[in-house]
Image (cartoon, rainbow, N blue to C red; front, side, top):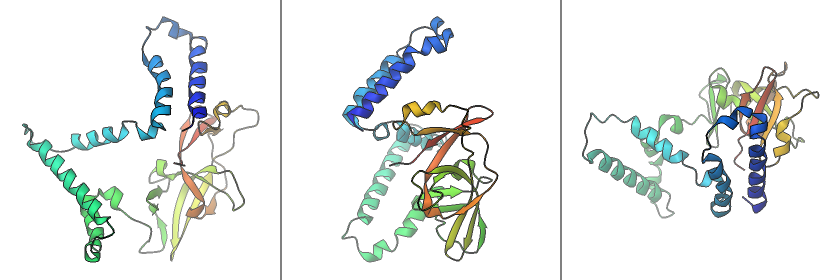
Length: 252
């Protein structure tokens, strides 16, 4: 985060606020709310605390989701909270000890078993290698899970470099994940580019907001690529019958 980026956020937010009643006249009849005022203060938080991902509340909401799914059998009185807290602290202390350089080698050998026991199945599943050749539903590389579109559409949406000389990634959807020996490849169908006659409204936000407008259709031809040319996942939102928004989800 830089002062320039924070300033761009505040400037673009003001542009949106100034045009709100013009583009959406019905908002003139709405009661004034503090949301917009608070949104302008995000500028101060960006300068003080850095990127929003460093201080947003999604991790805490995720923990709340875990707690809501725990069967309590209607017991109250703090026993459950104490059990959860003690278990969390013991697990964290053990993980920290396993990462210490002076941890005995014999203990390190049991780390894989420990991860299987105390990690959720979706996180522990490692499909970097396959027991047989052919098509697969999932593939996990460097801690990131990819899937074919028929299995999980969200995990199939990627940004990748179409060639070794390409400098800009293109969006696509994984249709097949195929392995042959130790080699793994993705069969990807690219997103159709936006028609030259249509305007991309997200160009005004570049490079601060990594979104770009594309056609809502996919190209007719699919291509086989290596997982190593994949930059990251992407998000796709179809905003009309002929247009879709692609958001870059790369962490760097």
